[in-house]
Length: 296
Picture (tube, rainbow, N blue to C red):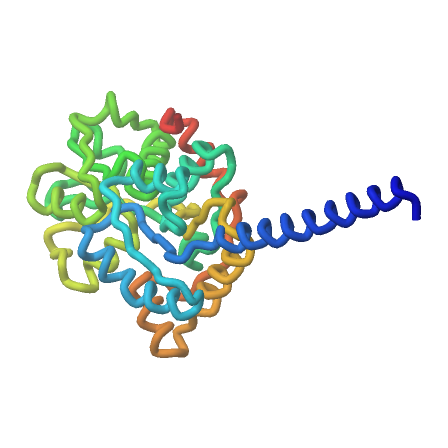
């Protein structure tokens, strides 16, 4: 072999070795993208203690299924939940339909909704009032005071506002005053205490409050229930490794009321079961937000 050929051969061998090393290190770096701790949060649509209580057994279940530590991280408001996922400070978030849309827009379409409860395919909101207020329909709200939940809530603001507008009621001009309680249970408390004439909230929270006897239905009543719409989901950032996304989805879909563990988790999540979801399910929410001027 000539001197030139030997030099070329050594150069090619060196390049091949460098390629193998680079691939090995690249593969190792890629493997490290999977989080050692799965950080989880939820929009604060209920009290912090209630959210933590609901999540505790689910967190233990996910630790077992995923083989990583699961850490519950509460946030102060809906906007904080959106920013935390968009900026990858949180790995898994329980979003409402509107907060999912906000996060997806903010991230340039990089938020992936994995699963939703079966109930979220046909979710509803309720309007409640003092049982003796004389309010029996949406039109009766004209000149009255009304509380929504959070400004970023799907079932506590966006969709109730949308149905008010469809009934030719402009909250800003036709109502005496509009306020925001910050959470669904706080909306009921505002109505029960007489701070407002009426309130709009998530039907699931209302039914839970009634079942737990935390609201007196002889004093506070539902006077309007909205048509159905898509709502809550568990979402992740698209940069989460695909294998981890698949394991997360599978863990949620496997939950069954036939097992003691599944029964406890599903009851706390107010779900019969979890089902796959997709971004297209929330196009109606996005349209409603745009029509109401709430999507920025």
